[in-house]
Length: 396
Image (cartoon, rainbow, N blue to C red; front, side, top):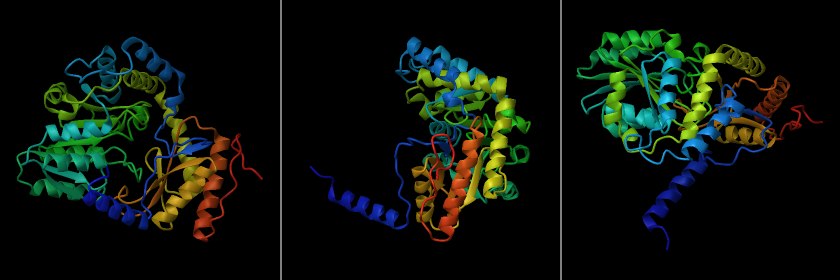
């Protein structure tokens, strides 16, 4: 039995168009990497034995799955302990853990809006927030990236009874940070909620406490923080950090929380352990991350970004960007390749992420290879650079 013919044609046409533009994606396992500059494991905690041991202990105690929705029977002690620790780390009153950062954003925006709500979002916010607004069917206005003056004007011009301003702590492609203090002032002026996606800033800014706390706005009743647990916190899942009443409301009205199986206890325990390490060692870990970020920027002549993500506008086409990333991976170097529609401005980028704890010699050799590959693209010479050895040195 074959697929219905109309869908065969639809899929074929779309894939052909995607391939012609050099935009196809892959799910190839990232094996054999000697230097991973694509990972979101910003603090290097996925390999920390304390995090792994916490996950193993949770499996032994609660099994491999939460087994049910959190409101049915899927809440364990480690879920509530994790929510408390994340609230303490971020300076918020309460937390609610979702199965992913994506579902956290979908759930919170849908639960807090009506068709008459006005949502004003930075054009570069994550796809999950764009999807959340679309699925909720709310009035949505996008302001130019980082243009809070435009956001202020849009909120002032809206007569909607409920207003929400949406930004990120650190933007995932460019790596720049939002001016959260100003965003908070704007939200208060218009009696709006401020939603801050901290997926790329929790564990990284404010000695690990996040951008909202570093900006002095954490704990404000007008602020709701969302975050992924799969980046600096070395696990899987998402969280909404907010006031106690908002948490109680989301338990009852966030559909992606109510009708989804809870995050696995092992993931909750891993995130709990990682957050504890950030609380105790955040100053050291974030200092290491900043040093490695500075090394990346110096080697590649990049303007330093706010946190771990360093973005390079690719000098060629999307297809050439993908080729460069494949070439680097073949020689043991992982880099992020962001092409439309992942880049809101339509310009292909290679994204380099700094990680605490990376071997400095390996990093230096990897960056030398990156420079060679970029130079070969500029000269239209696709001969790959020499691979790294298992010790991180360039081979002959």
